[in-house]
Image (cartoon, each protein chain N blue to C red):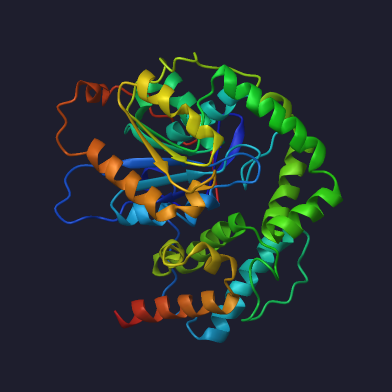
Length: 116
Length: 288
């Protein structure tokens, strides 16, 4: 998060040319973010694919998903609004969330801003 | 992001208010305070937070000390430490508006402490299944925490929780056991400052939401008689987990409450405190 009041510069969104929008590349980017997160728990060997679930497979807590939102913002800037994405989900859907669902959301968001 | 609040580093998530057509002046700001041990700001991030930002309210969510991704010092867990963290957080964020404080369970105890001890910073107080830091509360906590500390270290207890309450609750219980056994929280949280049983220290408007089947609902008569400006809501067929099990009703009640208390024009004398705030502190440290 950032606001002017904090005196912290907002994360700079990457340009369309830099942020890769094909699903394979987005999956690789998100897997990288997740590995960074898992490293903090000493779990850097996890296999991460589209079907991987955040809670059951990676054993991430919901607070880790909040941290992931910070990584997404750093990487994609305001083009990807994770808070808005989860606002549309029920709690049991969040618990069952897969990496592939998040990848699809990111790809869709990036393409929407490109088109606009 | 993480920011320095007093002697610890606190994990904060801020969702800025969506700009609303015809909006004048600054939007209201709500601060959500989560519960003890098995909880974190995620409980709000995945329930009320985004909806409030979308409704044109600035949303501040943070992890209490010892919880989530905030720092976990080995000691310093009296309720006033949590309250001071909250005020230090508002200072670090340069927050000059009076805030609408919302606390769930123990978060409500912290929020009530802040309303009692820093009334000039608080616009309204909402307690979701919570008890203010009165003498009676300290007894409940001391007993509950001693039991939890003893039980949650045993694998067979965690296994029982897994079988009967699910894997997610079991994992959170394991984390709770770890907090209790690596810090003095269990001995300290109930041993600090209290307010008088008559709640006279709380002067701002109070919204209190309870589950009908929760023990905490017994406070309703006290709240209604002791607090000048208080609205109590009891949700039928509901236990303690109001926030996650009755999210939509809680959201609607709270949005209506904030709108009522944050209209553009105020003729209410209590609003005259606006503008007389503690000096804005510089953000001591910002880590991403």
